[in-house]
Image (cartoon, rainbow, N blue to C red; front, top):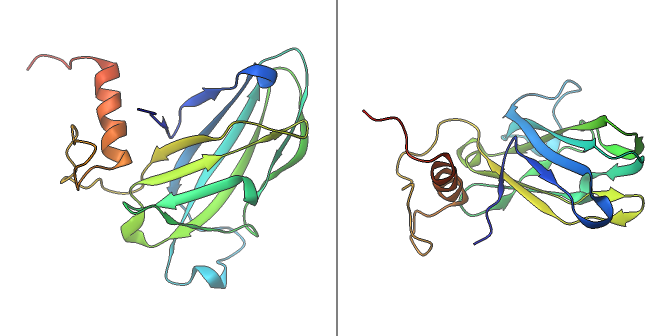
Length: 177
């Protein structure tokens, strides 16, 4: 089964973009500095960052705008509102060797849907589309009814449970009581 990245994890590119890596991180509730968009009335704002790092000896032209992001919230994967007026995108920026570029993005959703949050990103590098990658995380308290080892056909199964289960398997057994 495909395992998504956890918010904060780096994802390495292969092929023509080998040496580039990307991550979605710093997912938190935050109000935009320039004020709320009228379309977000009744919704809770949250902020996250997308960082691209160049670990090659060459430079790459990076482009990331609102159409290259898909933000889904809640168990049903409803679309979140991406506030493009308050977000800071990456528009044709040359990332030189051993440098990073970060985009700060604002979105809004109903407070009850802020766990889990799935963010899918597809960069454009030197006018070529890259592979899409998914990060999963959450804001606020986690639902205790989610079973960590939930079966795929279970009604309580979610990306959150899959991510927690994956992390527990990767970290090995915990300390003895």
